[in-house]
Image (cartoon, rainbow, N blue to C red; front, side):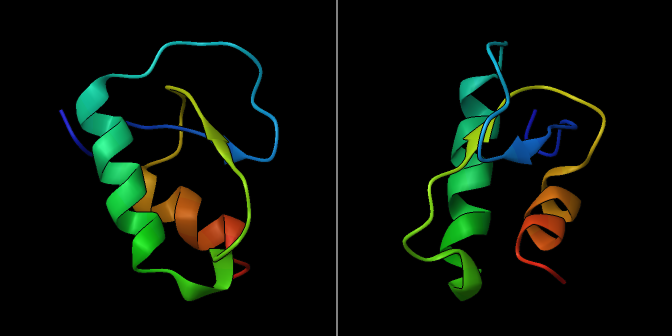
Length: 59
């Protein structure tokens, strides 16, 4: 389900992530202009998607 906890980083290592969460992360990244042009990786983890994006954007 979207909103599943996930880390977001330049390197996460290998791990699973549901397709719905991939879509949710992409949508969240599109709404965060400070991450334009940056490459990030994402897998299932302990941080909510919105929090991970905000943290990675430096908010």
